[in-house]
Image 1 (cartoon, rainbow, N blue to C red):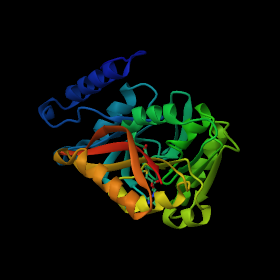
Image 2: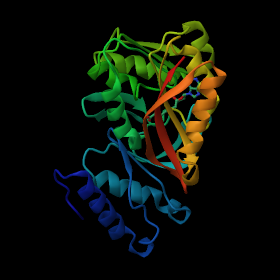
Image 3: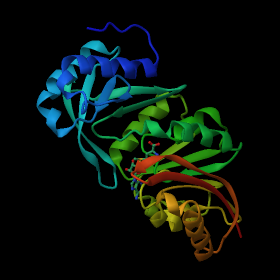
Length: 290
Ligand SMILES: C[S@@+](CC[C@H](N)C(=O)[O-])C[C@H]1O[C@@H](n2cnc3c(N)ncnc32)[C@H](O)[C@@H]1O
């Protein structure tokens, strides 16, 4: 069996494939070709015909990949508005709480309770470059601090209001604030962002909308928290290839008009990642004025 030393991620994927091909060569065509690693937890998806071998597969991964404590298998898609993952431990400890490091940021989370999209890493870095000193930021779907932690750590906002409807996510966010030493820079708030923004009033220079899909349903709430004179909204959503980028821009223009603003500039538009066949997770940074 392969012995793995200190190797990079692409080498790890290669070895991952080799070790699985070695134990189940007759299933080469349907074996998983990749995996997600969050902290010391590996998450994989399995073809239905491989489920009876899940223990063997899990234990092989556990034994052969470095720094792996638990192996989980996806048993369904993320559930509901809180985006709860559906995972089963197939090897290693039952405890699925872990600490994931991304650059200099630390995220503590339980992978069976909280979703973590590694596909958004570039977007997290890109956003940090936009933030200006002294801004008031409202993160409408803050989760465990995917965007807020990095901004608090590397930018100089006045304050970040980080809202999430999931109390477990906010508990982890509070812990992540401590772990990343950004106390006093983030105000964690449990609640539905549509209600919380009413209490906050028109305070935001910048609003982050890191939720999918159907994010357009929350645009009126984003405008209700934006400063009177206007500001920037980071609008994430999903669209078909043929709708890019006319449809999301039209949605933003209409939402602005409905709320007494005008779309004054598209600062950035881009694809974050593929969401489903021919459907993309996109982001638009848009500037609005009166
Ligand atoms: C999956 S996370 C976003 C992922 C993240 N942007 C990343 O980079 O990985 C979406 C979050 O929105 C929260 N959420 C859903 N509906 C909400 C609402 N109405 N108000 C506030 N938070 C909400 C969920 O609880 C979840 O934590």
